[in-house]
Image 1 (cartoon, rainbow, N blue to C red):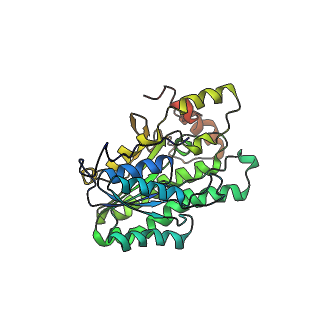
Image 2: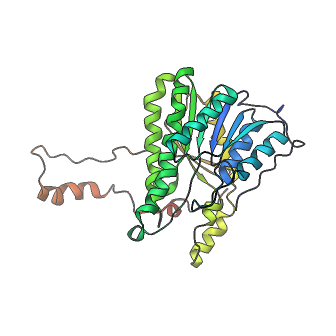
Image 3: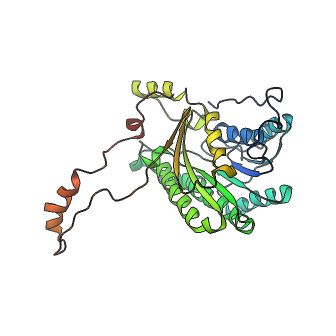
Length: 319
């Protein structure tokens, strides 16, 4: 279920306080759910928006321009400026066209939200190569394709911001999503690398793990009492509430925020830790297999990270 966001010009107009006034923002996967909410709010904040969506089903089947066109129509009806794009982020050449469309229409690009996604949930020992590759292609390769296509423009103008969507499935863990977890944790590393390589051009890159009840989440089977109970909680997670923090990271007022990993869940915003050494073992004469087993592992054991899933960490109801 995708949260519907009101975009009624009676409720707001482009004359409202606009922190993204004059900026050009590309939002991928913007035809529904989290991406739609971000595109609508970006326009409300004064940005001109490229609404990218290929209009396919969760499994990649089908394809239609209508979801993106509907979002563009809502933006224009409220007095905003937007254009639809139906190129696939998973294809290098197509991703180049997304950036080029923004440049052709608006002459610049100021922000990118890599939100496009898909799912092929299967237990690891049953997962096929196609099921793995399909998810990596959209999430990880898609984020690379779009970011890399925009990078020269950011470099030339010496400004720009990326926000990439990661997930607690990658940061913490989840059942039946090895492909999705690998892609989402890979996005964190990609984002950090972009931040490191492009900081001298005043380009920043951050990640958000969104908690939202979208059609992707709705597609996950709930065939146990526990899963049904989790679904009830998940249904309270509003897709539209991911947008404000996402767009705050694209605002000039957040120029000092770089290489971070955040989470957004309804009215909660989280800052995630990143891997750092937490305990060490030293042996002046060096290590052998035997001494590692007898000494190194026992020395480190008390600081092992618990074997937990995302739901084991976020145990409280959404605020």
